[in-house]
Structures are given as C-alpha cells and as structure tokens.
Amino acid sequence: MRHKLFVALAIAAVGLALNAVTATAQQRARAKIPFDFLVGDKHLPAGVYFVTPISAHVIALSNQNESVTTIVTAQDNETRQQTPSLVFKCIGREHFLATVWFDKEAGVNIPKSAAEKEALRAMNGTPSKAVVALR
Image 1 (cartoon, rainbow, N blue to C red):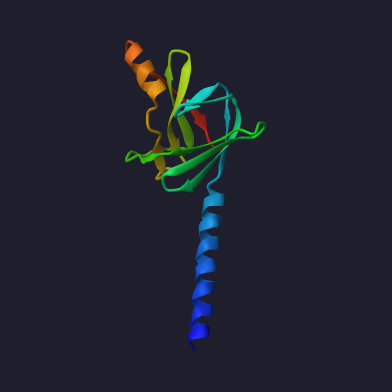
Image 2 (image 1 turned 135 degrees about the vertical axis):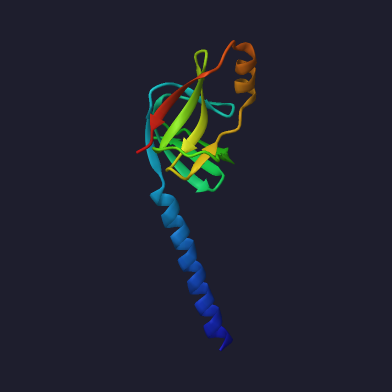
C-alpha cells in the first residue's frame, strides 16, 4: 500500500515539474535589440536575444549569434503594460535595461546598477526611454 502511494506521489510530482517547465518555455520571447546595452554591470552587444523567465524574479538573456548569456534578478512591477517589450533607459550614449514585460500582467523591473546610478547623477534632466518589442 505504501509503495503504491509513493509511486502515485512521484508521478504527480513529475507531472507538476513538467507543467512548470512547459509554462516557462512558452514565455520565452525574442527581441532584436539595435544597440549595445547594459544589464546590471554587464555590457551586452546589439543583436537578437532570447528572454526567458527562470522564475518569478530571475530572467535569462541569451544572444542568438554569440555565446553571451546573462542572468538577472528582478523585482515585481505593479503597473500594467499593453504589449510584451523590453524598456531601456537612455542616459547619454548608454542604454540600461530597466523593465521586462512578458504580457499585460507580468512585468519586472531590473535594479539600477552602479553604472546607471553614476550616469543618472552626471545627467541633467530625465532619461529618455527606448522600447523594443518581444515576440
């Protein structure tokens, strides 16, 4: 009897794990970013990127043509966005990834890096934004 219960629980656990992997894979998105940019303190080249949620607060960015991958910890964004996109803060000649929107309900903010904080201190005015669609 215990053996049958153990087998049933093991099958249920595997089913839940497969559902979680499938849900994450379905949210993987592609973006063509036309400029070099920073995520945290990591400088990434322009190109085609795959954006994949690893968990509710961890996102992976992988460059399609180069073996460049970065993983970033994010924070919930309480506002709502209409379309899946990446939002960058443009400060001088630098672009800093600020927000990732997978859909209308799921958005996360990328914490400001030391480089972004320094650029904001040196700047006069408000940074502009660049938005890149996720597909």
